[in-house]
Image (cartoon, rainbow, N blue to C red; front, side, top):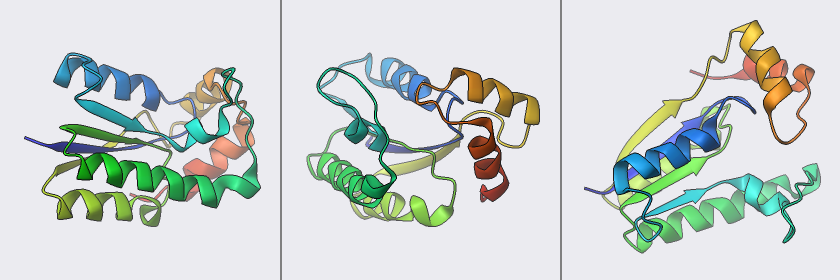
Amino acid sequence: MKQAFILRGLPGSGKTHYAHTLADELVAGDESQYTICSTDDYFTDEDGRYEFNKSKLPQYHNLNLARFINALAQGIPLVIADNTNVKKWEFIAYVSAAQAMGYQVKEVIVGEVKDKSMQHLYAKRNEHGVALKTISKMAHLFEW
């Protein structure tokens, strides 16, 4: 069975950890059997340094969607979209593409979006330096 997971959650909520755990559990971590598609990858250089550039966000989101669709087209059994996906429009193309290619689609909200104490924790532990103010704003805008 081919599966696509659409992860949603605030920065620092554990989406990337969840994606890797899912791959370990569902396909025993066999890298030929899964693809994790994260727009964050495009902000990371060859030395592993992350540098966010807001002006590149639309371009990188499009590249990430293309990578996701390519993985589906290759028939990779497990394809995971690892983005914040705060608004439904941000991930509907992922869902539509996966369904069109015969994948079972699961949307997973990682973490506690509305819990203020968790937002503080996420601000401390997210790897990209996203400030609490930004995380709280994202939580406020989150669509269920």
